Image (tube, rainbow, N blue to C red; front, side):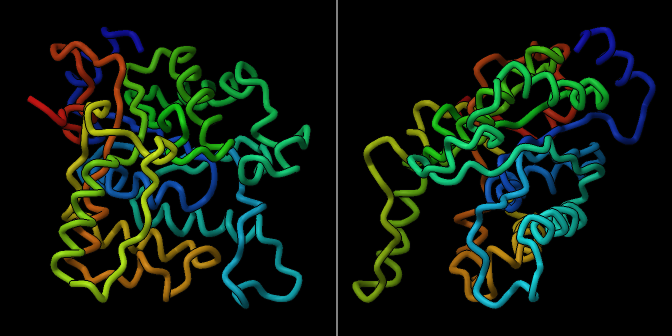
Length: 285
């Protein structure tokens, strides 16, 4: 984005002082990874836009949740809009690719899946939306897609390239702070005692990133219940008994109320977009 345009947008005094576009692989990824970020940005008056690469056709639906003959892709598409209403999102778009399935599955080879899409071609499709929205920030994923899913890795490649093509000032790679999560698990283990077994977190580098590589965080504890409502909207994937939805409020807020990002190129503070300075903060001084 032209720095002059940022200055002009600030000077006109618009209520919606910035635009954040959040790019995701599948429906419900926006809730789990960035729901607090999106809710916070919207609550502060910024425009928030969601873009999905696929409609999550290969997800595993909660048993009995689909009506006879109901297509999962249509159900999950509708759930995106329900989630968007909870978060305050202004626009939802789909790039039109098909879910690739987990890494190593035969579905990775389907010529129409997102994993097989040409990065440049897909990035230009996303860049059109970024340019239409005059995006100040675009969120993508880290280079391993958080946990190695092919569509998530592709979001990193396509989203970062689209940010370059559209001249977006900030590309923020959403990730999991592995060290922070391990500290939280140890704290819960201490509180709950030997009867509670924490979820296993791989330490082989396949999940999240070490804290040393993470540059920014979004403190969104006050939007934790909005985030959880967004997650509930994805009922085909997360039933009422899902472990994240049954967490006590303080535990949910502690575990999912802070979201983490890697920003490789940070904007000049003198011309940084308002949505960037309002929502994101450095992990370290």
